[in-house]
Length: 104
Image 1 (spheres, rainbow, N blue to C red):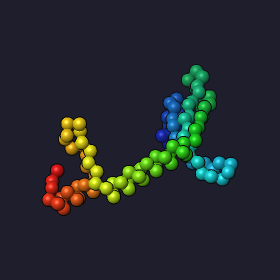
Image 2: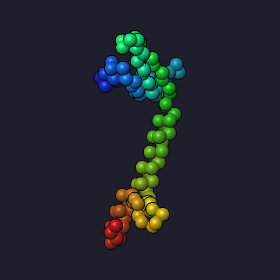
Image 3: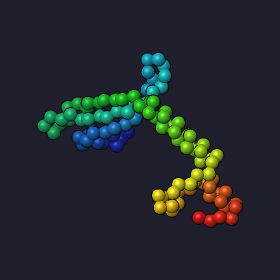
Image 4: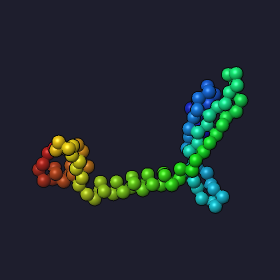
């Protein structure tokens, strides 16, 4: 827990954090936790913590990001608005169109 999390809890605000742990099988997992201060009469009595395993979701995000990065490096990509106006091109498209004498 960092100083911001501790500060938030100290003033009675909830805080979220992500951290790694080793499970019973010896594998590293990622947990995302929410910490909620429980107060009585303005005094914080305890901190309620609830954590979820987000390992699979983070791995899927990483895989998708890696696929996108690979596509950007290996293919020219251009995205249009429905009106036909160019919305976005990847760096590969920009480099190859410049080599052919086109400008965007």
